[in-house]
Image (tube, rainbow, N blue to C red; front, side):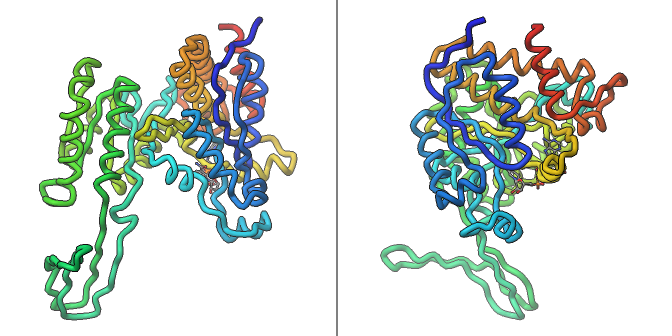
Length: 401
Ligand code: NAD
């Protein structure tokens, strides 16, 4: 059997711990036998980030800008314990943060739906994709404890020295205060990433804020989305048969619960933080969530939403059997391969990505799965497989298709 050709390489970002082990199994069993895989390889494993003073992370992001599509393995974000464990020169920053700062994108997270692993919300039949604005608001706020009676004002000093101020509160007791901000260019690129991704995946886009209460702050988000939609996307959305729908955040939450799914929900930073964890838990498992960073210039970086599964890695190192779920990491690869195929005009690559996803889902629906899924499935005839055997089972389904 001849292998599927690739025109342009994918940017491959290897990672850490158990997901690094999965990475190799997936390539060896599910990709290399079928594809003449072309990648430009960057080792983002913590030891190599440390050796290169984290230069490799920056290089991988620049390569992504150049080629347009990357696939990333989960990586350790160092904390004090990791500095000691890996004898690091420095507490290197989160690779995802570095990459996101260079590509300036929005992260879209979507659950992988499998029969037998049903969402807690019965009426959700299709995935709900969350898009979280990843800049500003409460995450970049300045706060103060107010010790007692007094006045708090917001003061803006323009470049020419002129000032404008507004009263926050006249305190007659102790209290607290918070000042937060956002930037129009950041909201604009968030909006564009969302509209582009909606067109790309042919799903309607919902957006919600609390603009009735926050008449300047949240209202600006609403206005920017609407202006960009009317000027640049309305016709394209109509042609694609999808819609842009704005509502209040409380109304959105109520509608999401009653919906069938199958749309993208764009959220402000805090709403996205909270709602994405609610959705991943309600859809079943963190190990079944995919994640893609889409930049406003149309660059894509695919990954699993989960981390490096540290606990399983220590078991693996101790020679014990693990049953780590590779599904989200497989879907990171298929997402990247499909996008590469689409950009390069190589439909065989896109068909292969579809087949590998179907083989993965069929394997689980046929009762073969990892332990995390066996614990939550409603299927009765279940075989729990270890990490490697589950990947081999997917290969066998794929070969029989
Ligand atoms: P984690 O996602 O690795 O694990 C969280 C929990 O979910 C654990 O109980 C784990 O057993 C379970 N789990 C997650 N993925 C699973 C899978 N594929 N199969 C079976 N069970 C799975 O998160 P954590 O433990 O908080 O972090 C571990 C490391 O991962 C940290 O060093 C952190 O910095 C890193 N991390 C990286 C990313 C990323 O690169 N995108 C994201 C989150 C965490």
